[in-house]
Each structure stands twice: as C-alpha cells, then as structure tokens.
Length: 72
Image 1 (cartoon, rainbow, N blue to C red):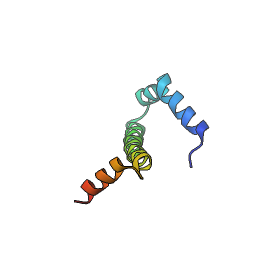
Image 2 (image 1 turned 90 degrees about the vertical axis):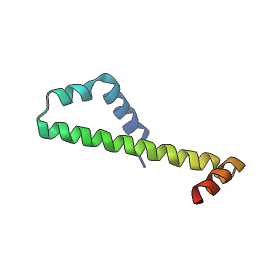
Image 3 (image 1 turned 30 degrees about the vertical axis):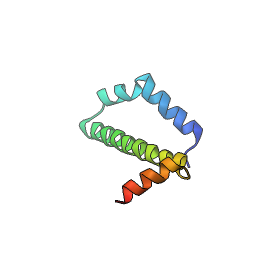
C-alpha cells in the first residue's frame, strides 16, 4: 500500500512544476519515460476511481442496479 508521504511528495512534485522542468531539460529517452509514467499514473487514477465507486456503492440499491447493468 502506498504511504501518505509518497502521495504528498508526488503531489508536490507535480504542483511545483518540477516535473515539467525535468521534462524540459531531459534527453529524449528520459522524456519518453516521463510520459509513460504519467500515462500509467492516469490509468491508475481511473482504476482508483472505479474501485472507490464499487466500494462506496457495493451494498446499496444503486450499486446493485449498476452491477446488474454491467452484467448484461
């Protein structure tokens, strides 16, 4: 499981503009690595959203309705 400190550090890195500067001054290979990392991070964010939705609505009528639709 990720630690709160890691998430805070990542948030600061993104908000500070440091990632953008790292990208700007990096080699082409490193730029591709950064873009791949960001793409993976966005994919994980979507998965986290889906998981949170399942957890929140798991034992509710709304969650069961969505579950029934998803199985069709």
